[in-house]
Every structure is written in structure tokens, then in C-alpha cells.
Amino acid sequence: MVDSLTVQIIVTVLVGLAYVVGLSGIVVPVLPGTITLVIATLVWAIVVGGWPAWVAFGLVLVFGAIGMTTSYVLTGRKLHAAEVPMWPVYVGIASGIVGIFVIPFLGLPLGFLLGLYVSEALRQKDWRKGFTSAWIAIKALGVGIMIEFALAMLSTITFAIAVVVHFVVA
Image 1 (cartoon, one colour):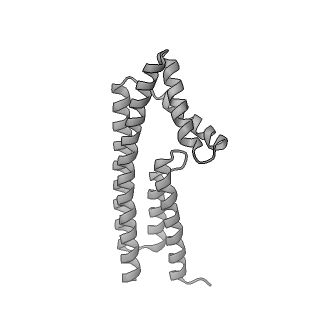
Image 2 (cartoon, rainbow, N blue to C red):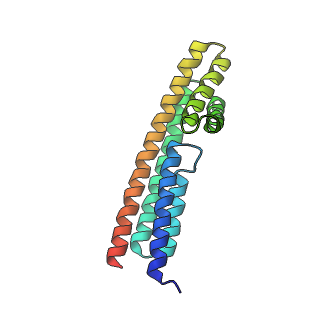
Image 3 (spheres, rainbow, N blue to C red):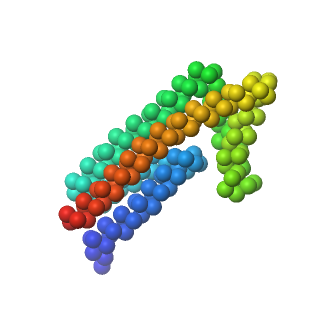
């Protein structure tokens, strides 16, 4: 029979790995990002229990909600102000996914940039205007990603502190 402390350690390590996936997912939109952090922390709080785990879950939930909302709203406002529709961004994401299989590792960013630029150039019917609006979209997405990533790092620090407090107090 596996004792409770062993289960807690195993779950903590698995949640730590989920944090790596979640942080990567914020930067690489193919993987799930902030949602992974929130769900992993919820699972950890349920399995481990105690006030540090539930306080950590509450904070991670708040940081995640703020990060995702801010990223979405700011990116949407910038794209709307620049009159860039969302479909070229979706084409860029799809091109990035295809790029992963064509050029390992570098295919995602190159495919995204190329797909976004070509779709904007075709939409604008001008390669220069396409470059300008694609650049605006890239900057808007970059700011959104940086804000969401910063709040995800706060979530990671919160989780790490909760882990230390839980295992020192327990």
C-alpha cells in the first residue's frame, strides 16, 4: 500500500510538470496554457488538501483569470483599432502548426509569421500594407502573451511557495 506522503509527492511532481507544459503553452499557443496551471493546481489542492494548497489554488485562479482576460482584451482592442480581423491570426496559427511538421522547432514561429503575413497581404491586396498590419498583429499578440506569461509566473511562484509551506508544515 502506498502511503499518503508518497501520493502527495508524486502528485506534486506531476503538477510541477503540468506547470512546465502550461507555461510553454502560453508562449506556444498549440499547447494549453493558463487553463493547465489552474486545473493542475486544483487537482493538487484536492489531493494534498490543507490551507496552503487552497490558498494557492485561489491565487492561481485569480492570476489566471486576470492574465487570460487582459491578454484577450488588450490583443482584441489593438487588432480592432488597427482593423485587423481575427481570421489572419487563425491562418497564422494553422500555418504554424503545419510548420512544426515541415521544419522541426523553428517551423511554428516561421509558419505563424509567414501565414499571418501572406493572409494579411492577400486581404489588403498590397504586400506593404500586409506587412504593416501583420506587424501590428504580432506586436499586439506579443504584448498579450507577455502579460499572460507574467501572471502565469506569479502563479508558478505561488505554487512553489505553497509546496514549501505544505511540506514544511505537514
